Image 1 (cartoon, rainbow, N blue to C red):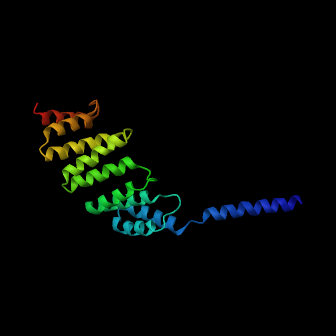
Image 2 (cartoon, helix red, strand yellow; image 1 turned 180 degrees about the vertical axis):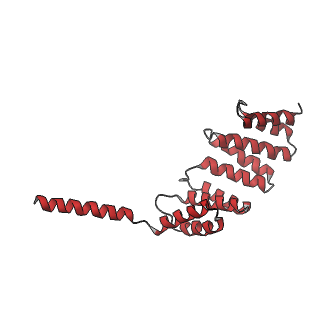
Image 3 (tube, rainbow, N blue to C red; image 1 turned 45 degrees about the vertical axis):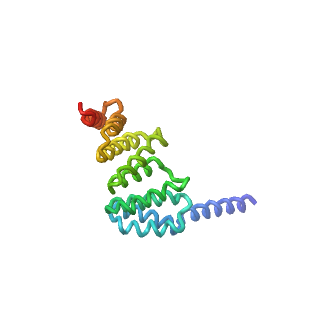
Length: 185
């Protein structure tokens, strides 16, 4: 009886090891898309990300796939398509990094010359995700730049000051200098 129990235990372990070694096609495609992205083959990665989106692997949310699609579009300079993908990512409650995706929505608006929309979208980062760290201060910086392009020096100075924070970093010092310049000091 003991050898039978040992044989059953061994078979269970063998089966568990074999089952975990089998990957779903969607997971393989997602990993392949990530490898293509890392290899700067963004158009090829897009094709696989879009394929995976129809049936995502269990461990990856549709929002995260949309974000990766947005990243690929951004890298090839298609900011309009990137904007749509980032907005789709934000619609998924399971998205892992909402602050980052929100930032990219605002930055794409900035790059498309939609300055008022850019300010609105960028300010959502520090408002909705106060623990976003660098994403929040960077969002303030680009909101300041968009405000500056709209001729709103008062707002640009305020946002540059918020981007600068304590002014300890090189970026913080630069943003505070921009705030002073925007105020006319």
